[in-house]
Length: 99
Image (tube, rainbow, N blue to C red; front, side, top):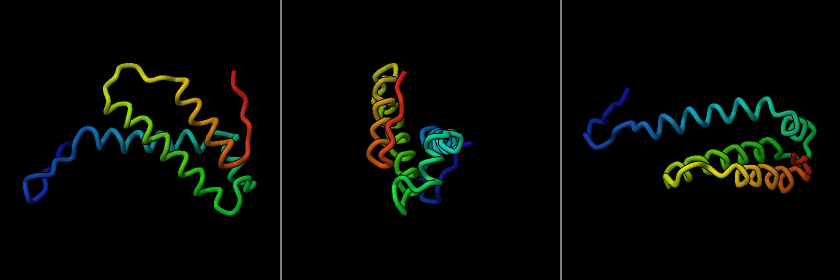
């Protein structure tokens, strides 16, 4: 449901609602991603491992919203995979396998 602010200019857009839902989905998926959870739990990224996992989730959300805003058609799965693989490697020194 859309709502307006008292100034009449702000409308809660479908895009912001979709971004909130996508953020929740990414959080749920990352919470079940064994490699990421092991990396955080065992502090493979140092003391700020949780912050690094949160940053990776934020990067994934940005990737989705940026690509959706472009409206350039289907998303490139290889691009998303590269983001995830690079994020795990750079943040946690974890080389996850590609199929």
